[in-house]
Amino acid sequence: AQSVTQLGSHVSVSEGALVLLRCNYSSSVPPYLFWYVQYPNQGLQLLLKYTTGATLVKGINGFEAEFKKSETSFHLTKPSAHLSDAAESFCAVRALTGGGNKLTFGTGTQLKVEL
Amino acid sequence: EPEVTQTPSHQVTQMGQEVILRCVPISNHLYFYWYRQILGQKVEFLVSFYNNEISEKSEIFDDQFSVERPDGSNFTLKIRSTKLEDSAMYFCANNGDSSPMVGYTFGSGTRLTVV
Image 1 (cartoon, rainbow over the protein chains, first blue to last red):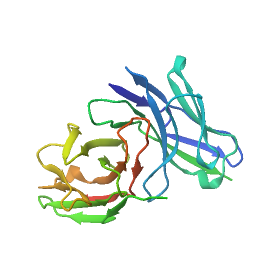
Image 2 (cartoon, one colour; image 1 turned 180 degrees about the horizontal axis):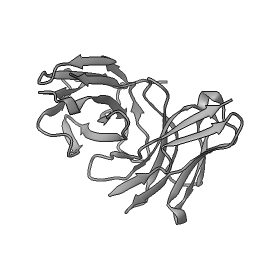
Image 3 (tube, rainbow over the protein chains, first blue to last red; image 1 turned 45 degrees about the vertical axis):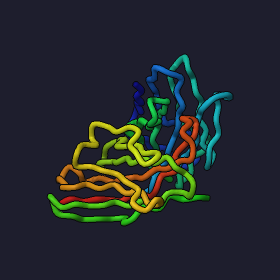
């Protein structure tokens, strides 16, 4: 079984500041990790994913995340926040279970970007 | 970029009524999923579907829920007798590969309000 914990349901940063959204996972098998973003009144959009290989993965809109197995973490970062980054982001883990391959999501972190 | 289309975008229904949520998947992507997000809560897995049968379902997906591909293309979620607690955003998701390394494409969701 797998689970995801996102620390901080709300994060507020100033425009141009570093964005850090935290995600820790638990998985009994090698995990595949995802970050999805949900802009207001829209669906879930894939930001980035880690499957195998390089542990630092880059996604859309300047976001990146680093898989750290020793810390069971997959934190999402962006060097410089933009007003348009305001959204809710979800960390998710996926593992091959039977035939389903379901995603298990965290509770989400709402990012607010202020002038 | 290929899209998953969901209809309707909003639906209001009276408690006890049947609702059908519809999803048009990406052509030739044969793995289907439904997730839901109750307001303020995390995205939860409901069911996965492949080869005209359910691959996996969660505890939420009880006898009131059903899924099918009525015409071989659209993918539907039916709730037979809606309850107030069924009010949520329902997301259809789709991919073309059962590999857990592949991310889903989510639709923009149907907001169901049961009154």
